[in-house]
Image (tube, rainbow, N blue to C red; front, side, top):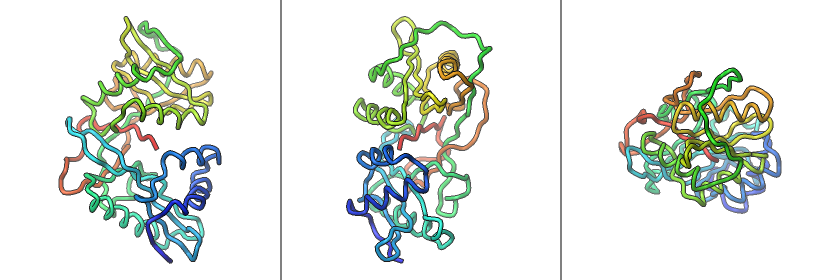
Length: 277
């Protein structure tokens, strides 16, 4: 088995592995790899010329206690079924971690499939989320609702939450539009709630009820957006929200971090990371 850093020439195989393991549509995978594939930060295991496993890294920045840190988002960790239980993932993750540390990143972070999957590599729970549900019988405060992408209003909400919730990725307008385009390829829609000209929150969702992002500045705005989106798709929906969103829900771990040289402490204060691949 050969272990090495990926190159652009590996894209076709990496894309095929992504589609097989994560059951994504070819259209989304092609779009994703156009925008999110960073072979210089990614590693693969090969049997001859065939890719057996991969671990992808994507450079980002996160804010913790008001300070911006370079951080390596780990994504696409996958092994083809016939090559599992051979330690390939552990070897590739070790290579990616060493690369990130040597390259000056403050941490690696990821959303694991299971809570204990990456603990042997040193990852620790750093941020929790709350899964909240729509409720058709809930009453709402009055908000003006707009079905249009307004990057300035959405960023206003996002940046306000960054002041009190550690671990959120740095976003400017270009990154927000890229994130929304990631969701729009699968039919994502946006709904913004405002009052007296001030944006109070937004939700990005699709017609099958999947919620990609829910961000709000008050419990009333969280409830209104969630319930209104559910009414528009015609069924109950659920979404991830910060644990202090003010709604009832199920709390569970969200993000795990491997922090280098004590750059910051875990768990994060009000940690909440919207993971945009």
